[in-house]
Image 1 (cartoon, each protein chain N blue to C red):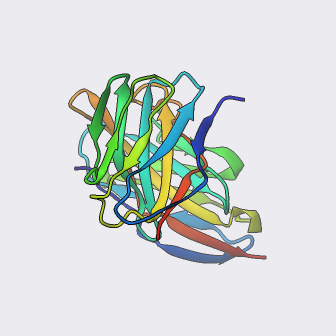
Image 2 (image 1 turned 135 degrees about the horizontal axis):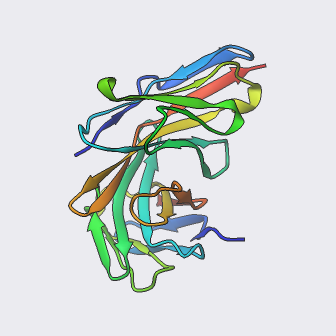
Length: 115
Length: 114
């Protein structure tokens, strides 16, 4: 079965600091990749996704992620975080399996941004 | 507005009882999913369904059952066989299994066994 690893479980930053959250997956074939965000008390929302094409993907709220196939990685970045970015972030991978697609999520990274 | 409705928001169950969590979507999505979210463990897939009348086990299906009789509905039953049912349960859907537009999530049901 697919595994998705998020290396940082808890990240604490000050406003204006740069952010990079790691995500690695294990499946060696073609995958679809996602980053989701869950603000306190809210639904999970899609930040960005990668299916094909340019490996540098831009999402909402100034986030971007880079797909590096050779490293099985899809790290999330933001050059300057804001207090409102405090949330939990989940990396997800969608792999084909027997005619279906299996979505697997990482354990999540809790980000706290101090004003 | 289109979306996913999960009900109830909070649910209390006595040990030994079965309980059913509702998930309804009006997005005309083909695929639906149930996840369990526990602190520090992220989202773990319980069951998923790519089309009506068909569903597959996820990573932690033991003690759970589902049905998919209608496209818009994917109820999850937590049976008495589930040893640790207290958790936050999330339902999601997507346009087809490839989820080319991503997954849409409901607001969740928090189940507590008392």
